[in-house]
Image (spheres, rainbow, N blue to C red):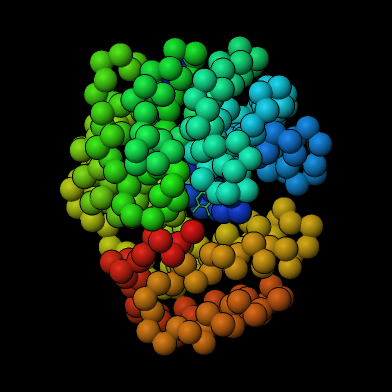
Amino acid sequence: MKIGNLDVGELPLFLAPMEDVTYKSFRYLCKKFGADVMSTEFVSADAIMREMEATKRKMTIFDFDRPIAIQIYGSNIEAMIWAAKVAEEAQPNYIDINFGCPMKKIAGKGCGAGLLRDIPKMIKMAGEIVKAVNLPVTAKTRLGWDPSDMPIVDIAERLQDVGIQMLTIHGRTRSQLFSGEADWRLIGDVKANPRMKIPIIGNGDISSPEKAKAFSEQAGVDGLMIGRGAIGRPWIFRDIRHYMNTGELLPPPTVPEVVESVKEQLFQSISYKPEPRGAILEMRRHFARYFPGLENFREFRVQLLQAIEVDQVVNILDAIALEYSNVQVDYTHVNLQKAG
Ligand SMILES: Cc1cc2nc3c(=O)[nH]c(=O)nc-3n(C[C@H](O)[C@H](O)[C@H](O)COP(=O)(O)O)c2cc1C
C-alpha cells in the first residue's frame, strides 16, 4: 500500500494520533513493537501561526519515527494552508488533516469533526492544502455528524477528487463521541466503492488481534489504525501482526516484562523533558493502563500516581515486578471506553 509514493507495506498497522498520548516516548515503544506508520498528536493551525513553543515540540520528528505524519487541525483555510507549510518544514513523511475530532472545544469551533457540518468547506480546505505543499496530504474523519447524516461514501470520493492520498475512517459519528460500537460496515462501503482508488484505513475499537483480523476482513480495508488499544499495550502491533501471519496468539507479557517497557518509556520521556518531573506527569496517564486486572494492585497504583521523583517511580516499578514476578497480564477484560 502506498501513501503517495511512500510504500508502507501490505495491511500496515497505524498508531492513531492521540492528543497527550502519541508523544515521542510512547511512539518509541509502539515503533519498537511493530507499529508500521505513526502520527504526531494533532497540532492546532492557530497555535502554529502563533509559533507556540509546545506546538513546535509536538512537530519534532525523530529518525525512529518514520514513516510518520504531522496531523493538523483548524477551521480557517488560510491558517490551515500556513500550518501545512510550516508542518512540511519539519519534514514528516506526509501531512494528515483532522476532520474527526468530536470534542466540543474543537468541533464546536468548526475544527475537526465540525467540518462534517460544512462539507464544501472541508473539501475546499483539503484541496487548498494539497495544492500548497509537496508532501502527500491525507485525511482522517468519522462517518458523519450524527446517525441521520452519514455521508462518508460521498465525502471519501470528494476528498479523493481534490487530491487527498489516503483516508482514515473512524467508524463512529461525531455525536457518538466514543460511545457505542464502531460501525465498520460503512467503512467497508467506502472501500467497496469502485470509484475509490486511494487507500482506506479502518479505525475504531481494535482491542485485540482477533478483532483486528475480523474488522479487516469485514471491511476489506488497506490498513488498520489502533488508538486506545495501544495505550498500556504497545505490543498490540506485534501481537496483531503475528496473529495475522500465523493465526496464533502470542502469550501476553509477564509483569516484569511490562515493567521493563514502562521504564523504557519513562527514560525516553526524561530524555526530552526539561525536568524529570515533567516526564513523571506525562507517564501518569499510562501507568495504570500497563497493569490491567492485577489483583490487589490498588496500593501500587496510588503510589505510582503520587510519586514525584524518578527514583521513587523506579523503586515502585521494581516492587511491582517482584510482587507479580510470575504473573502474565490479562487483557481479556480491558475496557476501551475507559482508556481515553
Ligand atoms: C486520548 C485521545 C486523544 C485523541 N487525539 C486525537 C488526535 O489528536 N487526532 C485524531 O485524529 N484523533 C484523536 N483521537 C481519536 C483516535 O485517533 C481514534 O480515532 C479513536 O480513539 C478511535 O480509535 P480506537 O478505538 O482504536 O481508540 C484521540 C483519541 C483519544 C482516546
